[in-house]
Amino acid sequence: MTQPQPSPEPSQPPSPGKPKRGRPPKQTQVGKARKRRPTTFKLPAFQDIATLTDAFVDKLIHMYKLAIVHDRAKSEARKDRCLRIEIDTKYLETSMAYEKTLSQASKAHYHQRKLQEAQTRHMNAETTHNRIQMEKVELEFKLAQCQKKLMELEKELEKSNNSH
Image (cartoon, rainbow, N blue to C red; front, side, top):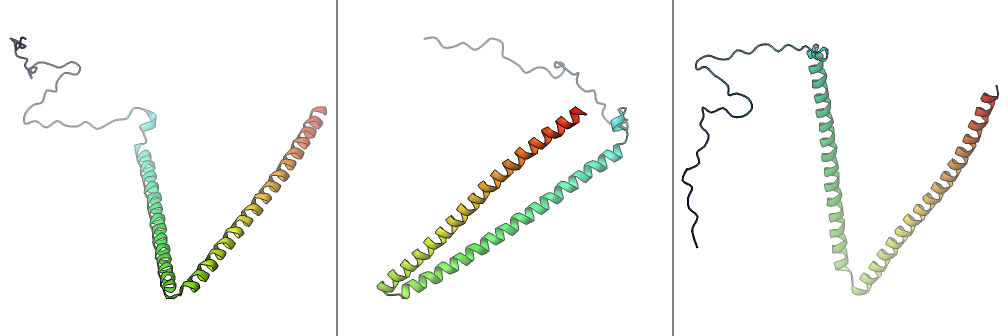
């Protein structure tokens, strides 16, 4: 087993005087500040730069206004959710306190009544959903009939225009 021998020539980083590929290095003079030349736009699209910047600023303002409105709506929704949670919590706490005061038979009767109320609400929601679905199907059928009549009338109109 032989150990790898270190290379006889140690690798050195490239010398700072050696130019890299691509752009030549900047030549700066110590003590002299470089003066910027004013930018002149030769393309016609950039000649009215004030209008372009005003339009850009207007777009930014509009974007920030939309963001503010969006954030306000989110915070209002968050407040409403928190309020709803507080109301639900208070309702559950009072319901729990009421249930603790009931006897075993009264508690069973109370739970039976709550179950019936929930089933009634569910049936009402299901009935409403089914009624809306039926109305939707009827309206879609009427729409299809109207579209069919419209197509027939358009064909008749086209035939009458072609015959003249």
